[in-house]
Image 1 (cartoon, rainbow, N blue to C red):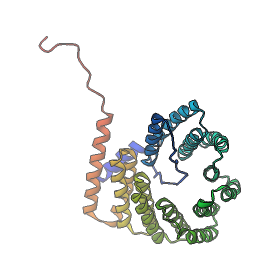
Image 2 (cartoon, rainbow, N blue to C red; image 1 turned 30 degrees about the horizontal axis):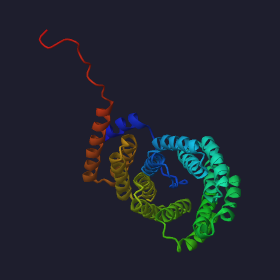
Image 3 (cartoon, rainbow, N blue to C red; image 1 turned 30 degrees about the vertical axis):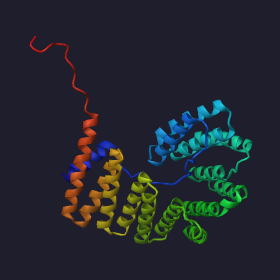
Image 4 (cartoon, rainbow, N blue to C red; image 1 turned 90 degrees about the vertical axis):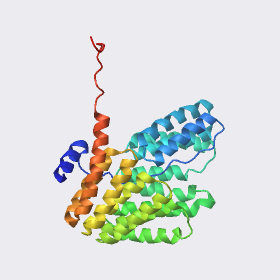
Length: 324
């Protein structure tokens, strides 16, 4: 059974874990067009549930509808949301194109461009353009509406921390993180708190404290769960599993991978679930927990059965009538 899980899983989905890396999220937009509102609402829900390709298609449709109205707020909001989706998908040049469209419409509607700048800075970071990311981030606070400055300040400091981590400067990242946590005390935003926990986990990993990092990823997963971000929660559980594995806490590592697999399977992502099952299997074998291995095997069989039933071609129909 253990070899079957390994062999079948690798054939089905290949190696590696796709872990959550946060980016700007789509924003709800006020609209007087009921159909546009419906399409944009479904797009946002798809984004939050991790169905990024579907979300991008829906936001593209909403943007076409908004362009028809020549409404600057509608065009700007849906162009921004489409850019955020494409950035999550790693399609950075396309994302920047729609971000530029949003910039023009935000200016026409006299709206704050802080969210646009944050997304642009995040794309620069993910593209490896670290100096550009920092330069763009410097423009965020001057562009923010007065009431939102504390929230944006935290996000800018977290972005600086991520840049420092990408450059291998964990101590610089720790300073930025500590400053962000001071401002965070004034914020009750679950997603912002989740982002802080994730950055702290990465800082702890970079400074050789994987057990403490795993606890931070557990906290991040809990915050994402409280905001119904279940796909991000599952991928963060997997990150916690990796950290526990580095700390040689194999029982906890297996538990997190198993829970990630179960959640992703329930969300309809069987192939990603299989990757997590493989990771859970490796951890459980090191822990020597035979009962847990059986639970993993049961989940694997359920997922495999589902995947194979979907792949199975329909039976060929015959033109002959019975009895002929």
